Length: 129
Image (tube, rainbow, N blue to C red; front, side, top):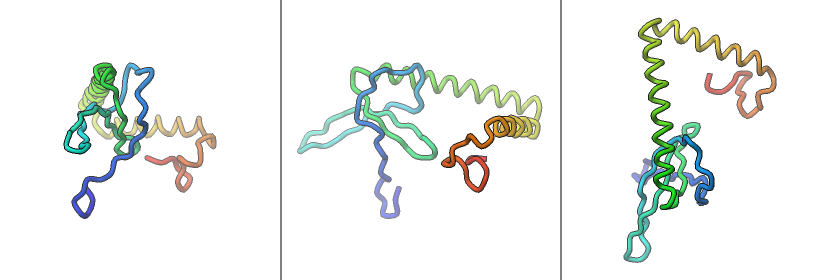
């Protein structure tokens, strides 16, 4: 919400319908309503977060079930990942898991070196670290 109480504007990525629907998609499909004159029309949109921003994409009625299935597949995979992480934390402790994560990131940073685009760098380090 903004200061004056209005909803924050969501940036629409594309008004085009999805041509080739991948097996997994981030986000959820929601029904949205638009008022034209005195009539309310329903349409479907997929919402997801990307780098902290809320994104929105129009979904054709013919593609709604396929997109919902793809979103559910992604959610299921993420749920399995979170369960695995919870098991690792329970077995080894949070400190050991964080140390392993730091070591993996260090290895990636050493392998990539200066090949990281400048848009991902901030003060000599990769963003998000």
